[in-house]
Length: 240
View (cartoon, rainbow, N blue to C red):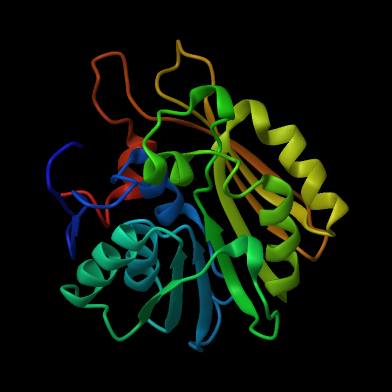
C-alpha cells in the first residue's frame, strides 16, 4: 500500500503526504462499525472520526450511511490537507467536514455523536522512529487510551456506538477503561491474518447501555493467500 493513491469502488484515497497511509486496520473498522439508526427510519446520524488521517474511515461512513454527517479530526496539518482533498474529490463531500482538533484538549462537550470511531495510535515509546508526524499518528503518547475513552464517553449520545480497532493484547485493558467510563461492550471481533496465526487485532464496539455482547472471529486470508469469504463479504462494498 505504498502507492500515492488507493482506489476504492466509490472514491480514491491519496496518502502520499499523510502521516498515516491506507491500511487494513482502517478498512476493517470503516466496513464494520455500526450506527444505532442503521436499521430504523432514515434520520441524520452524527459521526466523529478521531484521528482521521487520510479521511478513509470518514469516507467509508459516508458511503455506508447516506444520512450521516461526519466530522473527521486530526492534529497533523499534512493529513488534514490531504483528507480535505480526498473528501472534495469524492461523491460524499457534502457529508464530511475535516477539522484540526487535538482530541486530548476538547474544550466543549456540547456536541453529541451517534457514532464515534477511531483507529487510534497504539505503539509505545520504545518504537519511536524519529519521524515526528508519523510517531504522533502511531504512538499512544499522542492520545492515551484513557483520554480517548474518557472524552468519547462524554461525546456519545445515550444510545450511541463507540468503535475502535486495537492490538489484540490490549483488549482487556481497553474494555476495563471503557467500563470505568460507563461504556459497555456490545460487539467484539478477534482478527488474525491466517488460521495458523495468533490473533493480532481486535475490533470493539461499546454503548452506554448494557446489552449482551457478541463475539466473533475474522480470518483475513486462507492458506493460499486469498481473502477469505468473511473478509471479502465485509469489504465488498469498498475493495475493487
